[in-house]
Image 1: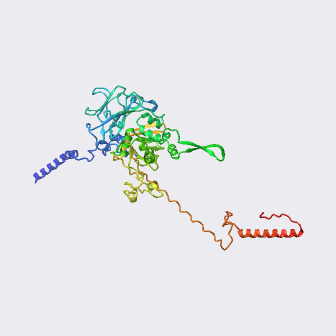
Image 2: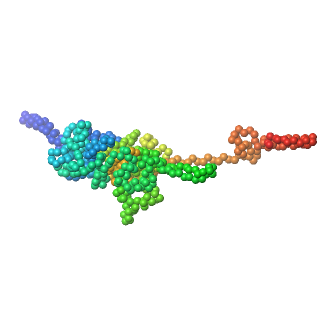
Image 3: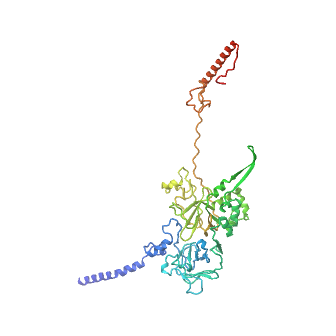
Amino acid sequence: CGRRGALLALSVLLALSAGPAWAEDAAANAVDPDASLPPWLRNTNNAADEPALDAIGKGDNATVVKAVEEKIDSNKEARVALTNLVIYPDTRAGQRQQIGIKNMGANAIDLAGWRLTNKEGNDTGYVFGENPKCRHMKTVLPSKGTAEYLTAQSAKHMACTLNFTISRGETLKLLDSEGMLKANLKLDFSGTGEYKLSPEGTNYWYIPNSKDKTLMETLDKLGHFKHFTAMLRHFQYDRALAGLGRKRWQSCGAVAYYPYYACTTEYDPEYDIYYRNAPFTVLAPTDAAIDKMLQEVGGSYAPKLTLEEFMALDEGNMAKQLLQYHVIKGHELTSTYKQPNSTLAYSHLPTNRNNSEIVSFSDTFGRLFIHEDCVESHTQDEFGCKMQVEWDKCEEDWMNDEGLFSKRQLGYCEVQCGKCRCDDPETCRDVPLKDIKAKNGVLHVLDHVLDVPDVFPIYEPPPPEPEPEPQPAEILNRFPSYGDVGLTRDAEDADRTIEDLIELYLASRRARRDRESSESARGSRSLVLDGLG
């Protein structure tokens, strides 16, 4: 029994001594549900992760698009491009020398360990993520996201910048953490201002400072929107974007009440509405985008439509609605715009096409997305979507009828109820070039033409039923009153009737005859005027 107790005590001691080691092994081998996620998506309370969460817009109402995707491309799969290059800053626009890196792939990339240099050698340039004091500098870029980095010219004003400057003739190289070349660009730019990658990604566009230019001047100066500007001028919408005022003309002609010609000035009411809602946000498709649209409208087996043929379709209404839908009125929508007094995760702004809105998503990575299939179907009552949201009706079954009556899969009021999601690249399209400021608005460049959505009419109450016509007064058994025959407005207070007038008239005639007979008897005759003349 003593031997047995000793063996038992020995086993207990061994178990106690091995317990922590076993626990450590189990913890090391346990499957962490968040282990497959990148550090900025894990559910941790480490302070080191907070800057990354702030950088992707944690708690930001303007961010519905995933700022970083769960999947990160490997160095081999990563596709990047250099853009937003400023070699010679325009001080009038507040520019500084900078280099931008854009993620061209479909998944996120991590720039930690990558090196950007303007000289040869493995020890030159700037290594991302190497400086522990600059953890707030963005190294993780989502799909289509762009990060801009200031050069050493701004080192006096900024703590974290690149460790070199750039000049014309140098060659920028971006290498990944394994030393593979990912981007290579010779700086052959001499203009003062910014150079951005074109929507097609094949060359660079010079974006001069246009704050002293109108939108039409900016479109003409960029030179890639000849089709779009030709349509604006054809329908005389160019005057609004050029800040010249509304369309007007004079008509002159002879008038009867004046011996000479008289002239009147007339205004186009549609153009007046279009003009007085400045500033504008113009979503301008490139010439290549409009050429593609003209081919699609003409059909795959037919020759491409000419621009004149397209503008003549449906008596010009198709082209007019296209232009009106690509212009937002009264707002400057930018990649940093947040709609005031709104709790929605996106912005929805009215266009110059009646009852049509542009729904846009943005985040802190300079991305701007336009949703092409988020359309408001208004409730057909006198309250409207605004009141339905205030009354918390968005989750009720009749509001989510899957198109039974609303004609929309998401039901009624999908915009104001916050039902729009930017998770499908086919319907939520990236804006490749954005935030080109002008004097009377802002310009964004599209690589495709937006689909003009159907218009869902806003409820209008039916006209009131006409009041029944008053029944004619019963005048068969009595003389009509003043009111019956419309002789006075005070029909209710009229005391005298037609009968009184008749009696008065007859009495006057009798008195006149009496006077005439008496005067003739006396041999003299005089003119008498009675009260009725």
